Length: 378
Image 1: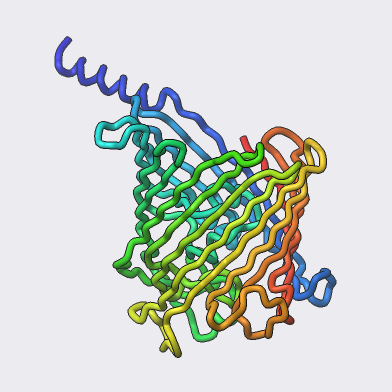
Image 2: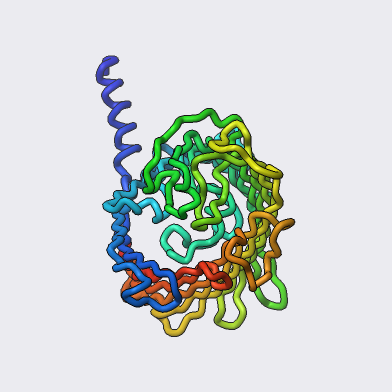
């Protein structure tokens, strides 16, 4: 066999290894979001529900040899608000295992993926309109980066370094205050401005499961440090026109009592508004202590129908506002969400869901949302 034949054989073996075990999958996620300014929809204070989010998720996985796995996931949106589903346009990453340079049993992930923090590591947030605190808390959901994960005894650990926000969306005066969702990838206009982020975010997450009184209790602790988009109290989203330096500690748990599946999270940290990225002059103290709570309960009614209830509160300044003061002024910057969902798993890999949520129920500026959803996985 000559050199050319050898090269062809090696190339053929590589292609067979890389593409001979391709696995295709995906999902169709359709949501119709209707918003209103009171608790019950009517023609005078609710819109017509014309916002249609239609996402086709296409996933390809394969293995290359014994040590490399590759996953690619693309979200094909057909709506200007499509980025509200999973808040990104997809993932692409490689997982390296069994390499001599890695700790025993550890894996290295490289690419774009959802970083691990808090209860988000246990939830189905990407496919569920009953969102958790991850966006209010961290400021973004997925990003390019490196991630090392493994086990030390019964404790799992995840350490990752993200690229962090690399652009700001400049907007006209009053846009952030208006409550329009403006990004970082969403609608609302503005001009995208590339920046140099000199503080790439670091994530650390550890979790484990213990037994107590015959029950299995999942416990997790998380830490975050880096620059990210600050919370926007006008719409409960983020303000992508500037950056803040964030430090976060969080604790989360998940366990069952009788038939109830319960989850909870507590987060606390410091935010410092960065002068370098400020679009307008900053008044007052640039540093604030933030705090958030999240509670979630899943109640199965039958084998195919369940009810989910959720409450969360985000306090962007604990010195200025009391987290659990339910009689709040119109100008208070706290953001609360009380919601519920009825889900029918009508066949394997498919569900229909109806979500109802109320934001800031204790304020005169409260508003509500109804979201019917159809999700089909294949």
